[in-house]
Image 1 (cartoon, rainbow, N blue to C red):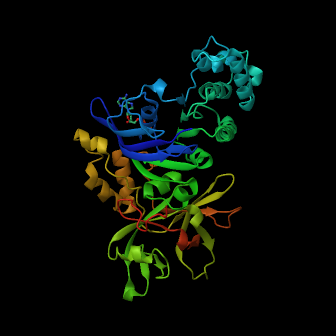
Image 2 (image 1 turned 90 degrees about the horizontal axis):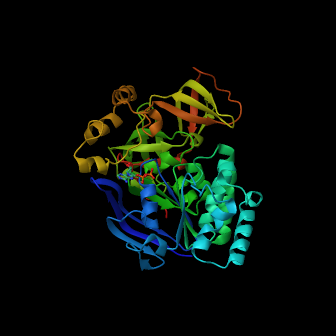
Image 3 (image 1 turned 60 degrees about the vertical axis):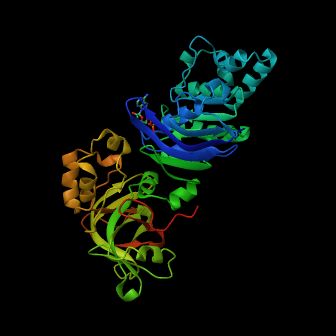
Amino acid sequence: MSSVVLDKVTKVYPGGHLAVDRMSLRAEDGEFLVLLGPSGCGKSTLLRMIAGLEEITEGDLWLDGQISNHLAPRDRDVAMVFQNGALYPHRTVRGNMAFPLEIAKADPAMVRERVTELSKALHIDETLDRRPGTLSGGQRQRVAMGRAIVRQPKIFLMDEPLSNLDAGMRTELRMEISSLVRSLGVTTIYVTHDQVEALTLADRIAIMNRGVLQDVGTPGQIYNDPATAFVAAFLSSQQLNLLSATVRTPQNQHVLLDFGPHQLVIPWSDPRAYAVSQHTGRQIIIGIRPDGLAPVQESYDGPSFFGRVRTLEYHGHEWLAYVECGAPAVAVPEPPDPRLAASGRTESGGLRAMVRRMFAPAEQQHEDQEQVGQNPGSGHHRRADLIVRLGGRPAWRPAMPVKVGVDVARLMLFTTDGARIDPPRR
Ligand code: ADP
């Protein structure tokens, strides 16, 4: 077992492409750490630098208390499993799993015993004499995992090992990876872009965007108390509502979030009130998950929005309502891409244009979105509707005027560049 420490690790690929930007992170001895982020954010590059497959441009990598930047991969005692779980096609399952021990000239009786034992734990003991070509995708990935772990490495690195599998197999293997790795107690760093995988598997999650670490904490900490708007949006299973509001402190009675047609009060007794009041007169961004909103009666006089149901969406286990409420929606704020800045190019007309679009009225945002050709599913949400989670069979119907109760304790408060206003508790 071993700890992994990254100290301001940076990777610039030949040609000047900045893939990882001063990442500092620690995986404790025996910890299951998940690196989460959208495709292209630098997760695999980071993992490959830990494995020694990619050179570190700047910063230090410490394995088990030793600076290891220049250690050869074979001297790091690290095993890696990739997305496609490439196996030796002419060796049987047993031959594939035994290979790392045979190379290390281990005692053949011990090899046999270890492979048999591990194949049982991975539920592939029935396939030991078969060749990889005759196995299902899930079985091949189990063999790849067995081969990586058979020599009991100090560090286990997994790069999207489940992403080529169908949904059912993914869930099954996810549970097995979790119990196997935990029973072995090997320090594991697991890369994925899937927030469900991250939340279900991790002891802690490190979430990256554009080569930069955004947040790190237990799944509960970063889900409930995210450091940035990007993290909050990325971890939401349904789209996160992000609205722009102006902060006011009328007669110093309380803090008021002014959404134009709607206002919400944050009383001084709320631990976030002081931090928000520092933004009086300025715009901030409010994040609300759809399950932080609920239908209320017309007579309800607690914190609420009002609007008209545009449409209802059935999701099997829940309904979502899209409510037109006239509050200004904003896109997920992202820092300018350092990789574009380095190359002198700008992104969709530059940062200033991006901020202008972010705070344009929602109709304008839709136009801009079409102009720049962004995919609404890519994280740049631009819509004026409030998404509300409805339990069971909804009483709401399209075009109905409705009142939406707001759980003020669950509002997430961010500056216009997406940083949390009230610091997360870590
Ligand atoms: P992720 O694993 O999060 O999808 P990667 O680490 O694979 O991201 O890639 C991060 C960025 O570095 C991407 O923009 C990718 O195109 C770029 N990249 C990856 N490998 C190379 C390489 N060998 N040369 C140049 N750029 C690369």
